[in-house]
Amino acid sequence: MNSSGLKLAYLCAIMNAMIIGFSFLFTKIALEFADPMDTLTFRFAASFAAMSIPVLLGRVRLNYRGKKLRKVVLLAILYPLAFFALQSYGLKYTTSSEGGILLAFTPVLTLLLAFLFLKETTTLLQKLSICLSVSGVLFIFIMKGSGIDWSNMTGIVLLFLSCLAIAGYNVLARRLLKSFSPAEITYVMLGIAFLSFLAMSLAGHTAAGTLDQLFSPLASGAFVAAILYLGVLSTLVTALSSNYALSRIEASKMSVFSNLSTIVSIAAGALLLGEEIRMYHIVGAALIIVGVIGTNLLGTSSSPSFPAKSIRRQ
Image 1 (cartoon, helix red, strand yellow):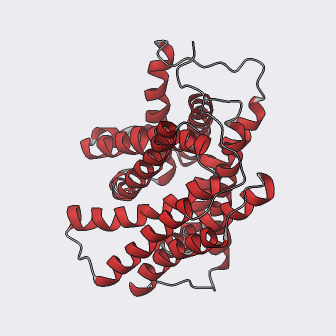
Image 2 (image 1 turned 135 degrees about the horizontal axis):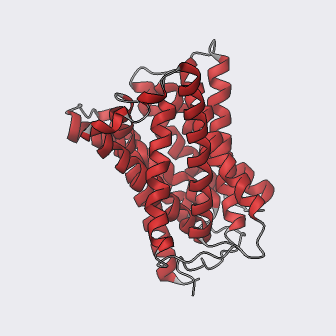
């Protein structure tokens, strides 16, 4: 494998975690001005528009001729459609802390699905490292006094299914990247997500008789700034970079990087909101980092990697 390509893949994985870690703050800002469905609509409108510009200018060339697009459609259904829908409705019945706890188990689900469908194998030390990373996230939430209220089974099931959706995305994307470039997959995903969320948002406003209020949040500079971050960085850039990383790194290794976003969220809260960092934050962060490093360094996987197709196609 090209070592420079592998280094770039790991850089993309780390960058993803950093961007997503800050996205929670911007999501909170956006939700002060619009409901979740409208926020998703504007978020994916921004991401799809941002990618459409270089596509229309010919800077990013896409070629879908002779390729099975229905599989990319399935990928888009898993993420972002199913993931965001299940997560949004799941959080109606549970707390954000419960969502964070369940989301931490995504690497474990990815490990199982990657073994079943991609025949990826990991060493015992790698499995233990994944569990160590998950335990770091759980330790932070538990020490904060958070837990899971098992009486909210509806919310728990929905959140678990959202984790299963993103795990399925990691595995399916890894397979599809053998025949599609990261840009080709990303563009279809963003287009489908934008049109779907727009249709749902329009339907909701039409039913409520509030269609004239759809664009009112755009009058706020804070909302526009939040949407640009969420749409361009937290959606478009992370989609491109995660798809590139998945073309170079096994799905089981890639997914564990998601837990790094917990560390970034803590740092963002301290830097921007003045939240206090306690010793259990440091201990949990150390467990997460050691787990991520161990997963990617301790042992090798039997799943072969393959070169990523260039984003720009001649």
